[in-house]
Length: 406
Image (cartoon, rainbow, N blue to C red; front, top):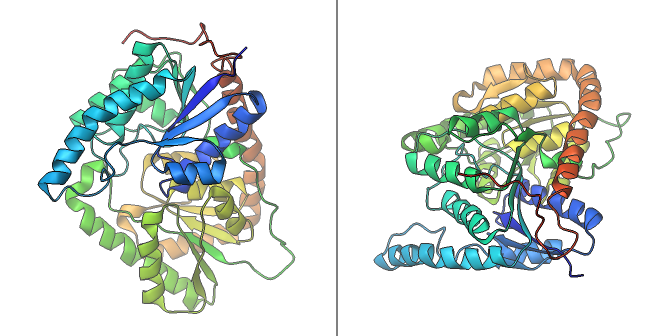
């Protein structure tokens, strides 16, 4: 009997700790449920994935300049040729596996800028190859959103249709895919995969007050707001800077956090503008690092979705600077729907008022989170039980994997 071959696909190892957290959650499950499985990844940062998580990994794109702006004819030609080469490379990679899993992340979202020939095209290739080569492709606990871009919408719709299995982290995601014309009647909604990750112990509540963790983001709007990106970026940075300055003026220690490598210039800009010893920045390379910072904090104010997940998971009262409906839905699911502030229209004075209101209600919020966290963790465990049905016990592809006619 041969070992089952499982491929993991996504933008792992590229600097986004939320994406990597979803990878870790599925890896932990696979190692427990199928300890003999041969697992590898096709991803954005293969060297990082292999070094951190101990699995073989291959580069997602043949053209190494894929993420650079194509300013020269050579770059344009390289990207064009790369798209054709990637079709064959991805098909060959899919064919080597008994099942391919796309673990969590906002793989079907356009809440941040993206090009149709980037991840939407790559995911379509994976799902199309899976259908043609009879390798089930499972979209597990993914996020999705609508978009005004016809090419992105078409590629997303066909990728979802061609997948053998789909589940979502919230109802908004399933609704978005249904609105694209995909039959979602057999698709389930669970919760974000990160809710099963190990949680660090809480901070010492009898000790001195902890810091305020402020998670910032390089926010320039959604894929449909590219023409306003510079304006939104300036407005967001100005609002968050004024908020952090107000906290420091109150004598509150502030710990700046990020969720992606691209966010670091934002922390540097805030540090330079506020210029206070009370304001420091943390180096975080994983959701585990974020949770350790947040576990000892009094309160968290965060923009990135997985910053919020980490705060809620460790039971620290959180206020969402919301850039997408997924953040509002997550906060509502955790009983904190009133503690949201729009990232596109930050009013530093109003944000400070909401922060103080949250702190006054801190004890009740902690009790609410202690009740809600086990519920979401239980949903993810049920997700993994459903995933087990797709995982082969041997090298043969499972004949019970659901296949949908596009």
